Amino acid sequence: MRIEWIGHACFKLTLESGVRVFTDPYDQSVGIAMIPLKADVITMSHEHHDHNETSQIIGEPVILHGDAPLSLGGLRVSAHASYHDEVCGAKRGSNFIRIFECEGLKVVHMGDQGCMPGEDVLAAIAGADVLMIPVGGTYTLNAKEAKDVIARIAPKCVVPMHVKTAHCPYPIDPVGVFLEEMDCAGLASVPALEVSAGNVPNGVVLMKPMADEL
Image (tube, rainbow, N blue to C red; front, side, top):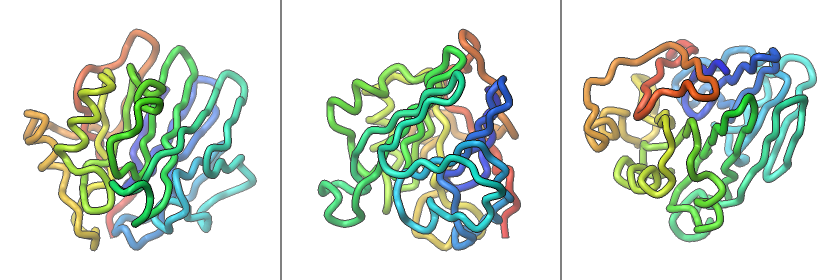
């Protein structure tokens, strides 16, 4: 599997079969251009404009909202309901954590998770090969909270997302705050991550946005 970070909470997963999956497409309010999405599957963790933009979608991919599951070839997608805030959704509603299982890998995208997940969700996502987790705070987990989640579920590889970039107007933290919390300040970014069963890097992987900043 090849993983690329488009920006914000949007990633492109390209399977060995050629199936292309995009997560949480955003609008340009996040300060990063949105690229055209030629996809087979698009997932949306919740219905906020920076996670469910459809204007750049090409063709007619399967679009998964809420907890909708999917089996497509060797890909299995499931979702677990959680919250966008620390008060059971009272501020910002629900959030769906999505699990992608294929090629002997377990990849978890946490969407706009805003609190420690419940025990049932923690059990479902435990031991992920790759965990994409928001770390910017304000609207989601902050750096320390994200570290606490990581400690509970022990993923092999952690990819931070939903952070302040050069032109992002949101009051969230840059990724450096999380890197310091994880004792890996100064970590170099990579343009893509290639993973396979038994070949997953350990620790934090910092990715460079694939799309251009506005």
